[in-house]
Amino acid sequence: AAILRSHGISKGLLCVGSTIVAVGPPDNQPPFQIAVRHPREKKETIGAVFIRNQSLSTSGDYEKYRMANGKRINHLINTATGSPVEGVAAVSVIGPTGLLTDAFSTAIFVMGPEKGIRFLSSLEEIQGILIETEEQGFSIHQTASWKQPAWEIGIDRRVFLKRVAAALIGLIFSLFPKKTFAQQLLSEEEALRLLMPTADRFELQQYTLTAE
Image (cartoon, rainbow, N blue to C red; front, side):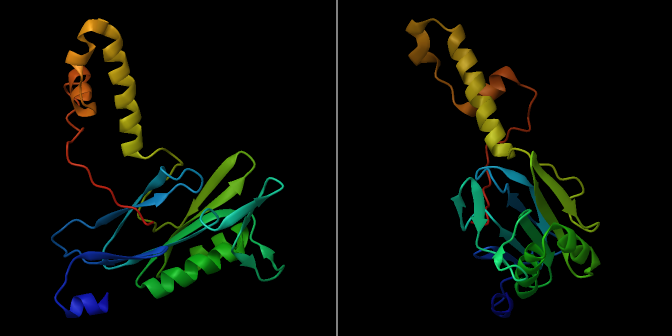
């Protein structure tokens, strides 16, 4: 990031594995919006955060793992037991540098749910979220300063719109005679606008940004 700034670059994102570093943007522009992936559904997210001249790092049990007897064995080791960490699906942290966020996301994950949450809450420069695994899903713990006030496990907006569009298009086609089927082809956007003409929130321009 420092090298980019030294060359006059005031706005950009650097992605290095599980860490994203934001250069800028300038104060007169909106911050970068970064989605954090759902720990089990690859195409879904649990929300988005906003960063400016900061870094975001995530440690999780969903990229490097194997299944053994129905149990997920991840690559992060509990140094006290010598066994893979249990009870945590992911930890994401925001901080001033990638060096700090990468180190803290891994350390907090390895601490486990109880110690990790307590330690995360004690840090002044770090904002974070810890996703704890439970028998019936997940529970989410976040610091008071986390830049997204209410997080829930949910479907990504783009995925949701695509599914809605597919269902609506199927409904439209079912209303037309088969002989006119080829003449009534509509795009997803056209179908949405036809059935919901007041839904001007469906914009043609799309933005895709992932940490992968």
